[in-house]
Image 1 (cartoon, one colour):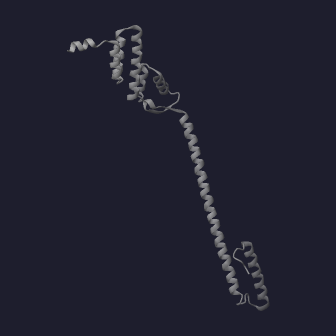
Image 2 (cartoon, rainbow, N blue to C red; image 1 turned 90 degrees about the vertical axis):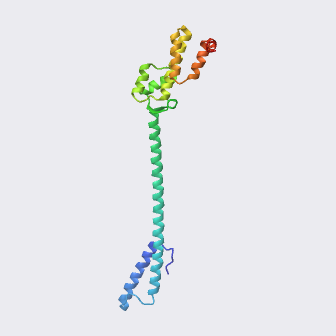
Image 3 (tube, rainbow, N blue to C red; image 1 turned 60 degrees about the vertical axis):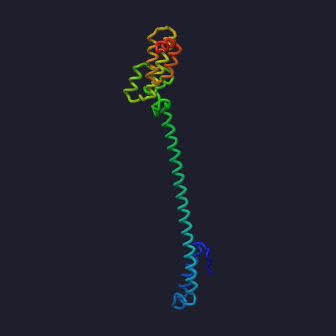
Length: 199
């Protein structure tokens, strides 16, 4: 008799034997099946049908599992490709966090000016260009004026020209650095006479 775990080849062989036996039986008796063998045949077909259903379910589950694995691998490949593209993209841009400016193309005119501003003073023309192109903000303005004030202060210390000191004080004020202005005034001009005048 047929067992539950037989494979499809065995089922095919079983069916082939059954067909051959049915033809022999019909040739000798005129009937295809005897009624006493019908329950056994039905049981065998049901066993194989259940086995096929289980096999089909297992194949379907395996196909779904493979599809999920394939989707996950595809998603991982896409993520990695995106990460590499983003890294390549970010290499061609630079950030200036101290000025609150991000993603400026490396080597662009704006990047060159902002790099110079990071390291020291820029000229008025560059400052106006930044303003005209929309790169100016409070941090850029403050850095420009403070750097320029430091330059004026250095000129004053080397030449003792009063206008250099006046310009340094004005630029510190524009750069919103009033504490440095007060410190500068206290260092350079003795304000004790002002206190005497007020009293």
